[in-house]
Image 1: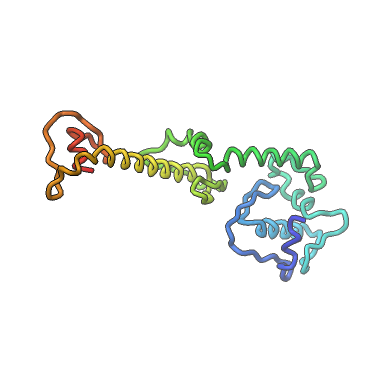
Image 2: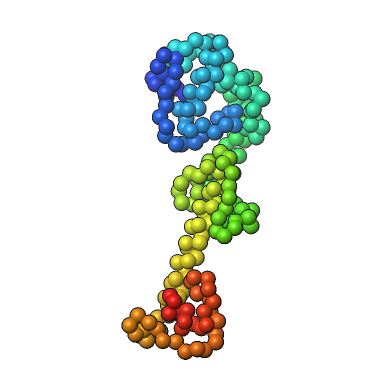
Length: 220
């Protein structure tokens, strides 16, 4: 049933797929580029097993399923949390329900658009971020970020999240400085703001400490 929609795309016993990026995890735990690529892997495993020959359709002997043959080949790499029934190649009703719950929990934790959820998910990476940069591995574990894009893994998604956070904070600071400095605007002459030498250190948008609010506004 999973691969039925691709039957008409089989040519000379091979399934040709587009490069559309829509990551999907297979029963063996591996991430495939899209559903078609997953089905192509299943078909190749079935053919390579010698049980069937390459034909124009996904045809297998009676009482033999694509997943049964495929999982027999990949049994060693079955995902423990998926609890796949390798003997029958399908999920029992109880196992399917458990898998749904696990996926729902993952979506709640990783797929929520709530910024608080992303903040909690990225807490561990915040400490290792240096000078605004988070160095990540190339581990392939796709996750959708708050920017709506799919990132290679949680680390790279968190880097994008931190950048988004930085931009949001910078915007808030700009608005605050704009309001704070509005009273000095009428005093500007020829593009310069004459300020007294009052010593009242204030941090500016550039991160530097200025002598006072007026000099900070001049820089702003």
